[in-house]
Image: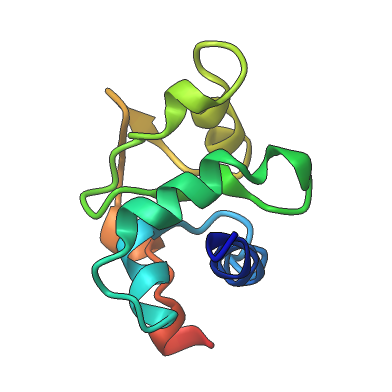
Amino acid sequence: MASEGFFEKVYQVAKQIPYGRVTSYGAIARYLGSAGSARMVGWAMNGSGKDPDVPAHRVVNKRGLLTGKHHFKGTNLMQQLLESEGVEVVDNQIQNFEKLFWDPMKEL
């Protein structure tokens, strides 16, 4: 399947997101040269459960919303994981998103 190579590249980027920081599906897609593939990055994050080293909870939408939270076990696991790293979440929205945002284009 062609997407497997893409998914693996997504996982390699996601594994570099620092503790207590977040990025977006679109930022990862842009870094990989696939600017229109944010949704595919989301699919990759959804399938990352087999690899515990992929911090999928640190990948959110471009506005800092926890749009992928329904893919985590339990009702609030994504938020709990972020909060355990010191990220404040109110109504599924990351607070201080701009400050916490990690851009792979600048960081890698």
